[in-house]
Structure formats: C-alpha cells, structure tokens
Image 1 (spheres, rainbow, N blue to C red):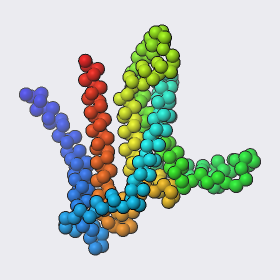
Image 2: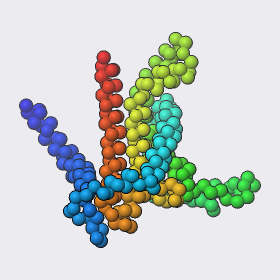
Image 3: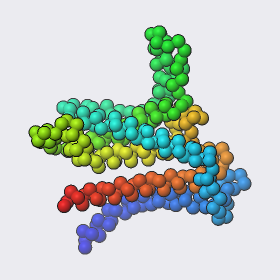
Image 4: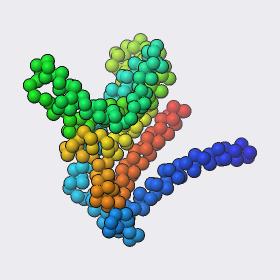
Length: 281
C-alpha cells in the first residue's frame, strides 16, 4: 500500500502538467467551437453549431484535401529517407558522432532554417545562381512558393523526428535474424521486407506519427514558402485568429485536427497493444 501511495504521489506533477498545459487548453478550444463570434473578436457565450458549416464549404474542403495530401507525401518521403539513415547509423562505429549531426538542426532556430532554404531556392538564391553560371539554365527556376518547396522543407524539418525513434528500435534489432534468413535461402530483398521491417514496425509507426501529425498542423513552412498554391489548415486557423478574429471558427477547425490526431494516436496505441500481446504469446 505504501508503494502504491508513493507511486501516486510521484504521478501528481505529471498529472498537473498534463492538466494545465494540455487538457484544459484543449477543452477551451473545444468549447469555443460551439460559441458565437464576438463583434470585435473573441467569443460570445451563445451556443451555436454554425461554425461546423465550414466543413461543407468547397474551398475549405479543397484546403483540407491539400493538407492531407501534402502531409501524406511528406510522411512517405520522410520515413523512406529515415529508415536507411537510421539503419546506417545503427550499423556504424561512429554512432555518437552521427547522432550529433542529426540533432544539430535543433540547435538552430526553426525560422532561421526555413529562411536558409529560401536563400538556397530563391530566384536569386544559391542554387539558381550556380545553375546559371554553369550554363545549365538561362532564367531562374521557380523553386519556391509551390507545393514542392513545402514538401521539401517539411521533409527536411521532420527527418530528425523520424530518424531518432527508428534508430532506437534498429539499434536493438538482432541482425543475426537477417543473416539466418539469408542462410535459409532468402534474398536480400526478402530478408529486408519479411524479417527486418516487421521487427522495426513500432519504430516505423512512431516515425509516421511524429511526421504526419505535425505536418497536418504546419503553419510556418507553407506560410513562408508555399504561397497561395500550398495554403494548409494551419494557415486558415491563423487567419481566422488574427485577421478575421473569428475564434469560434478557428476553434472548430482546430477541434477537427485534434480529432484526427487523437484517432491516429488511438490506432497507434491499439496496434502497439496487439503487437505486445502477439509477442508475449
């Protein structure tokens, strides 16, 4: 009983932290979604469901589809790059040094990294200047303010979040299993897809969640390098908060994002539970 009581005591700070900085703000956002816009911004304590009419607006649905599309593309490219990178790090004798290289971008401000890409991809940027001097192109390429630039820069910013959980799983993987599969006649491709990937599934799922969920709510990247062609839900929410000052509408859209991310987390937790039960059997 004493041990149980001490365990509950240790959980109090975490419970308070989660309640103050996660549960309460989320409940405020959800409650605002059912209120009426104030005359000069803010909210009026009048219950309404009209904020949810935005989900039937063709323009909003177009932005929603674009957001999901970009997020899926970013997730696919990020995980596809993160798996071989994490594998190489886990198999290298310079693990610590390579992990430091992965973490180094966190030492630089997020906006500075975006502006660095702007200086590289801009019409007068480093890449276009080099291509023109080499005679490969005559006029600058339009590498910014489109969907491609949003995908590229979001993949760059998401890679560390995908590499680290994958590395944690791959580093514990018993590579003797792959060798055993090859000895039994499996090709390198078969050993990779039938032995290696299934055993690092939890790391892949974590990498997908760590990439897809932030991409769905991305604001800075599409705002700075996306232009009108790559407006995403995060930009719509920010516009309603700061320009139109329609907080209830912004809250309704945010509530939808919360619902999507919560469903994704529940699916992840369910799959983890099933995997654990299968491994125990």
